[in-house]
Length: 338
Image 1 (tube, helix red, strand yellow):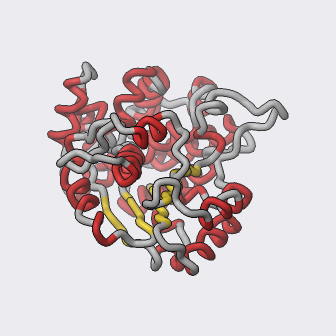
Image 2 (cartoon, helix red, strand yellow):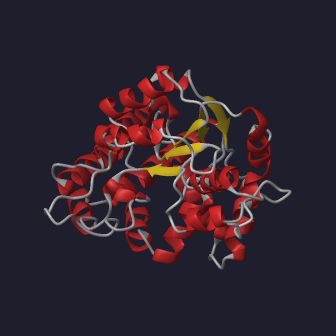
Image 3 (cartoon, helix red, strand yellow):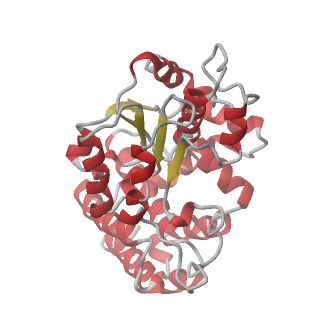
């Protein structure tokens, strides 16, 4: 069991309120990097716990909790892509193929016996699917079939960052619970307690997702690349897009596109509202750059970045993708001389 994060207290109270009237399917949704899965796992463990605490959290001392924490509880199943499993997280399968980022229909079909058997302890059987949007169409339809023919005391908990990507028919059969993103103050205070330097900036650049900000800070993920990218896009007229693309070759495409999306959001925001969200330390530069471009031009470029974000996990040629979006960025300033 993991302790609840400070920003999860309200959501946890809402979950606890469902104990006496649990639905067949529960959808826990919210931004990525705010601890939704940990909260869902805590809830699942607490439902199976023999003696949950007054707070609703599992006791972590009973046999049920010991089985759960060892990953061997007979009444619980976690379904997630192979890429998220600990055994395959950092490498490739023996076949040489990268672990799948999708939840396959075979993974859902493997739940058939579990769904139809009696609970080991006479209580609930729980299936946690994370992230739910990683189900492909076949696996999603397999889950839908189970939800359409619910079994007594079988609870599906779906955790998602992108509920809009789920089948409407699945959404209609789930009771939804929103986990709110923490405020800037709460998130930054939590990061500061964990020794993160410049917590306000780290939080903003992670999209206000504290767990993601902490991961980037601990791993140093993208720090050098982000610095190189920001240094260049601050001065588009001097930017060599091809050379910059070459420097960023080892960077994760999603991270580069994410940074550009945030930068362009701030360009549009400072132009329209006079405020920035992600890069307050670059306010003066953003004001100067935004004065020379139209909001419509920024909107068109943001649409290009949205397409690039969808392709970021499977780029046919990473360097070419970087060259394309960086050349486009340079082009939107070419007529202004910025």
